[in-house]
Length: 324
Image (cartoon, rainbow, N blue to C red; front, side, top):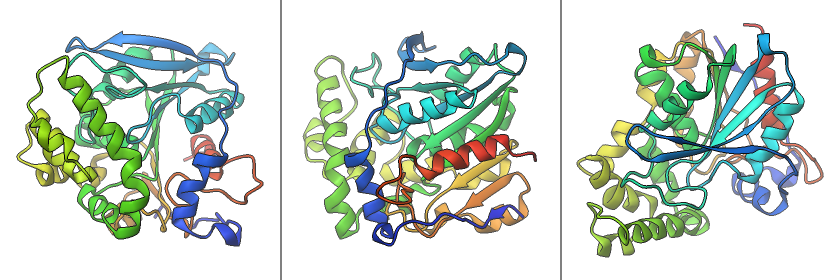
């Protein structure tokens, strides 16, 4: 019954989900760390850019961690480079990647990215896994939903090198997440972080290729679920935004995940609804681990203002080293 009793604690001043979510944007510095930038050509003629950071681990037991970023992030985000550095120090090679039109370059096709579209992740895994004994997947926020969908929707196509999966601050039900993000405080704090860049990308891409979207509606987008309605649905063939969120939610596919899989979601995460804490499933599924700290926010988990590390980085390493 792998529902993990969390030992995470934080300073009293940080026992607020919004503070835990916001503070890292201001205090986290990008570490100095070297990585190679590489590009793959996808089956549909687009490009997939990824970043590879390696160690000198023996070839016979090399272990790769692939990190998938969150909404409107990229593979060079500060917290990802920091994880690269920490995981390398423990002997793991690390790859992060840019979802389509993230990382500063518009992609060549009309596709952007969404929670159900795990095909780029699968393509990346299949192309970089040959030299490794084990490949583990790490997904953050939307990247966690994509990771869960890759592992659970069609487990028969999951690469046989996949060893374990770990997702952090990840929505299991997108409709519930949408409702949470429309509360008054979340709407004012987080809307501009995501909506401005998402809207801008669509408008820029529409200048160089024909997109099946109404640009007047795109320009009027104010909420993330508007983006689902006016961009994701028409581009990917969903009936509407609600249909997309229902189809793309990984909650109903967790049951089929075959590898050891860890969900770390804080109870005070301002993005997540109750469905993102699948207690009942974790209690009866031997390979699904669920940890729900009382505090931590969204990709926060700061223990105190003076701490130089983020607690979740150690939980990831603990899980990868755990004997199951």
